[in-house]
Amino acid sequence: MGKDVIIACDFNSKAEVIAFLEKFKDEKPFVKIGMELFYAEGPDIVRTIKGMGHKIFLDLKLHDIPNTVKKAMAVLSGLDVDMCNVHAAGTKGMMQAALEGLTRADGSRPLLIAVTQLTSTSEEVMQQELWIDKPIDETVMHYAKNTMEAGLDGVVCSPLEAGKVHAVCGEKFLTITPGVRFADGDVGDQKRVTTPAKAKELGSDYIVVGRPITQAADPVAAYRRCVEEFVG
Ligand code: C5P
Image 1: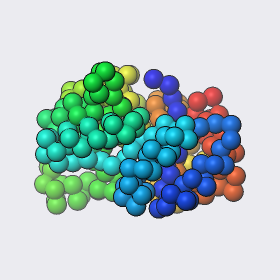
Image 2: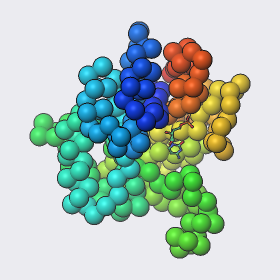
Image 3: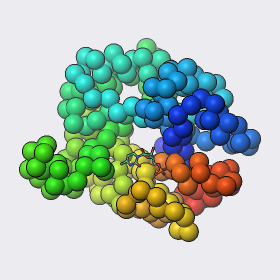
Image 4: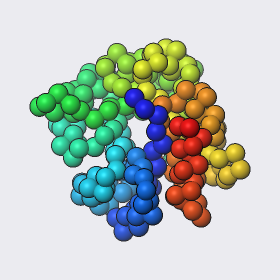
């Protein structure tokens, strides 16, 4: 599994995302499509961007009863996405059902990863509101282990957690890591950030980079800088 940079295309219209991707003439970056764009434009946005030659991480974070997730995943697999995700909180049974739904008749399937605890959830809220009576880092590792045991390919986590996830779940278990910023760039609303070079050093498999590329004066140059630092 090669290391790669995934651009978080957090735009809310097809016109904006296409105009952005058309800036790339010599390379076809891996693209993350999130809920906002998918719900605004529907499945056609996936077909269009696939048709332009990009790989797609469809970040819809499914969480429902196993049967519903299985059927929804079969639809996403038919869209030929390359990576998609679920909430590990949906249980191992739900994650296994998701894998079944994703697997095509020829045995191929997109990569399937899980969200452990959202980074927007603090330890305090997790314990007092969700009644999960454990430290948050232990919860994250426990959910990562559940994800591995369900047969999924990896988890979304901070680059700072990538080493521990690999130690617990094995080197082949993928870590997909947002929270990446250039050393000389704006941090924005991200709290714990690392540079692409540091993410590589910490063992991330894929970095997800949004604003440092999408809002750059020269997005192609910013993307190339990420690739150079992270992939080498
Ligand atoms: O613009 P920025 O580089 O902060 O974008 C990061 C992307 O990764 C966004 O699409 C954000 O929703 C996503 N993400 C994140 N932190 C998580 C999970 C997803 O920043 N824990």
